[in-house]
Length: 283
Image 1: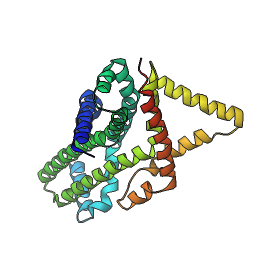
Image 2: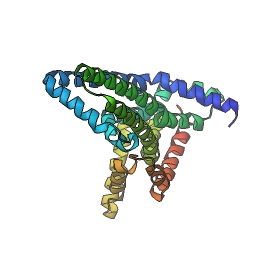
Image 3: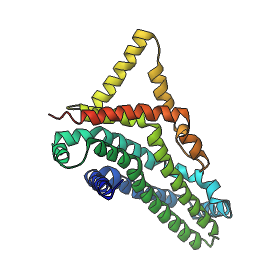
Image 4: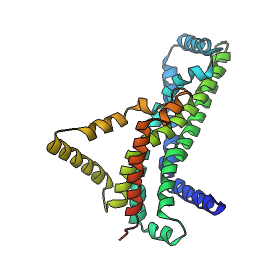
């Protein structure tokens, strides 16, 4: 890839971030202080001795333990952020190509030396790698502030807080696992990504209704004509988080290099190609 292409991708990604900063930056930024204030409120409801005992237990529990082995525990703390990320990703995929066509900005980008393929691939990279990076950065700040708060409480209760440091290291490792999980999830769910992009490029209005309606219609026709539910069962299997959540670094190879992943990537690539093709037909 030449330098000019890299500059093109950089400009396209920057454009996506600026236009959708509410989904990628502001959403996790608002979520983090809400969760932190909720924790502070809960702590204030506890008896000071009980709060001190809880902090002492946490410090002893993590003291000396391997951050890599304890990291999966802290992946639970990222669940609210992952839920918001997935929700924002669905909204983004549904509106991104639709919005380009609606405000006619697609005509500007087509007048530039930027292909439709580059534009669509940039959107996939944005939702699969760039957006999770911002969410993990905010989650890092959330963990850091939480650890500092717990350390201050521990010192005020005359508690040995060495274990809090191990707890923070485990939290940082969990962020790496969550980020890798987000990338693997994008590959595993590439058929869904392609499906949403296809109708974002196709629908003249309400792309969500088109995407959901056509899916339901295909499932109904399959059941009516063949008496099978292959599509529904396949989608259910793809939606299983155990297929893309990375609980240890050793799981990465097995999650990525398997036939189910390859098949999903092929299906997703076909749907993405359809979205690229539909983008050429602009009113």
